[in-house]
Length: 360
Image (cartoon, one colour):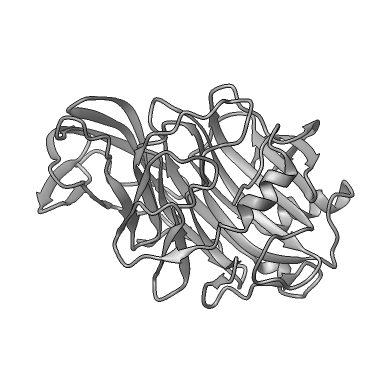
């Protein structure tokens, strides 16, 4: 969770922290400023976390492991702090801990090298935001309050004239991509890795990035990782930003997204009052062997209707949409991908978008 950005005073920051305790909400749509809810039997917590603005924001929680920002009236100055950090996390954050994460964990522990995380995200065509991981480290195994060691951010994407805290100190190739490295200090070290080309997914070992942090002298092996968070920092707007899937594992496994050996990542091509086009929905074979067919499911917000589709056979039951392969695009080799798209209508004034894309 981000609590500071560029020109925000540290004193104001610390004051804000005092009021940032998450509250648990039972409803799948969360509009409370600091509302949150646990999913998957407590494995993860999803939080709204509007810490940097008084404007409205709502998130639609996907019990499979993600969320969609359905409302966001933000208009923060881009040379200041973001409005919020809606996110999903494993670990402990201000006293709210998930189950089975193994966190806090010291960075020189034998199991630290086995910690992995994966995420898939989709983005609207408007707004000012980043799409980012936020990993927190503390000199103690802290489960509540502000971490004081290091904040490790991984920016998969950004839109608009925003930049990380501090200044760029280098460039590095990690986890199959090239990243700008930024460093600043706001009472704790903030190290940000900014992808040089936008990405919609990431699957990585935590130590891939933290080893680089330690090598640069910005972190210590004696510090504890307290939480792994993934979400968005919106400055302007933000409706339509979505985490489709998220996982944190402790056994070194490669985190196949929910649904087995394939993954589906959706991109919003365009939207208007009353409708939108989602294209491409990229289907990727994440397994070690070929697949001969795939099925993607996702959820339509209330009042939405599919008006056309291409590249897949699409059926709708209630608010659940199922898209299956056609004869020519069902067979995918390991690492191979194909795509489909669709157009939908929605009630006037609504900015909601589909969420919860899973593949099997």
